[in-house]
Image (cartoon, rainbow, N blue to C red):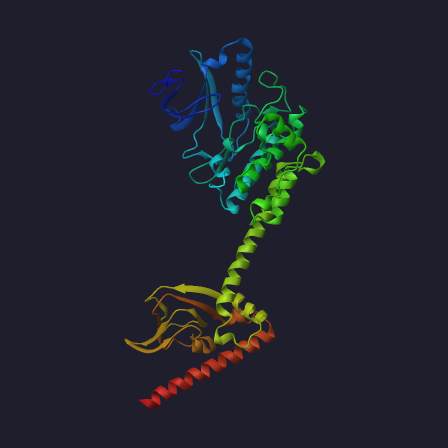
Length: 429
């Protein structure tokens, strides 16, 4: 095929080659009438040699234009136009800037965080559900047909072998076994009808790969692949990746069920369960964050008399703050009803330009403002990087009565000790 760069195809100014696929060359072009960049897929001319292969290829090529042209969804690559000019067959599509397929993330060295995998499959499931509601089965869901934009959004592409189930489209439909064998559902390999559940299975294979870097049904030859998909159970997900939540393993297993009645009935159902994974991951992160905080404060002198349950109550009633060296934490003259416990680092107590005291891990400050809401009588400055619990009376009042009582007792003891030390300083002077 001659390089089309610098030429005009239809109304489009062809700029550069973006890539090459099994069905044609893809170019970056510009639509001068609308003023937008587009991607143009140009068919390989050698594919039209021979009447039978040419007829099949024509169906494959323009099936994509016909099917994808029916779909307008934020997670599906849009098709704008198609045509034939001087025996050049072409399809004009949305240009996905910075787009790259997720194929690279299906290897052990390119795995994404769990949250990213769940997000990608969630958006793919929503895109497929939209297509299914339009009467379209994709039939070739695989990593090379899912793009990530420069903003890490998801775009489902390549509807070349898609099946239209609700309308008469025999002029472009391709019959028989189509798609990529490693991702095909058992019923397709048995040459049974493709359904929405066939795409669910393919998406499950893709999810398995993204999570483990391994193909669940890989084999050395096609008959073995077919046997694995139709008869052999896949290896358990958490044997390959220990950090996968049980709920996510359950979702993958259900997608990959060889029995239709046990497989998800729709991609919308898959998306709904994946939303539960999002919630569980968020909860797990919060629990981990809370555990880290607990481990850092449990040995502080302030909490010496607290049972673990009440330490958790104080943590939940506090705000965790970090401060840089030389940053003012409290400013003299401010009015704020809050109290601080130093978890890490050192601070100085400053009056005017004079440092009066140095406080470290386990020490407290801000007692008078907390109890009386009066103006701050000194400035507190971080001498190192500091982590501190900031506690307000309104938050601590939400704790249990026993926790509130213990907190007030320790707080008063701390304040009395601080006042006693201040008196000693005055006497010494």
